[in-house]
Image (cartoon, rainbow, N blue to C red):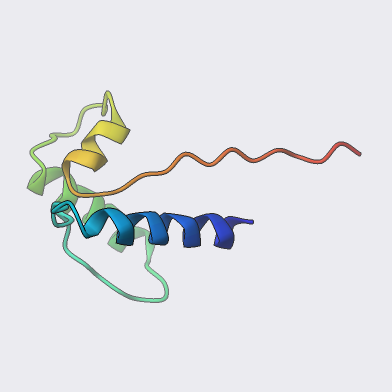
Length: 82
């Protein structure tokens, strides 16, 4: 089900991309299979620094991500009753 919904998002994005200019994602891309806990913490600190967040709580993570070029989708999953 998740793969289907991701496919839909890709199709929707491709459609709107014909009419709209989307912002680039504002994040350094690092691609590895696995990260150590220390690497994850360093990446988090780097992102906070690059986005000017400081070390406090993030009041609206959705708005923050959208403002940095991410496209988010709400997925509602229902558990089957047993």
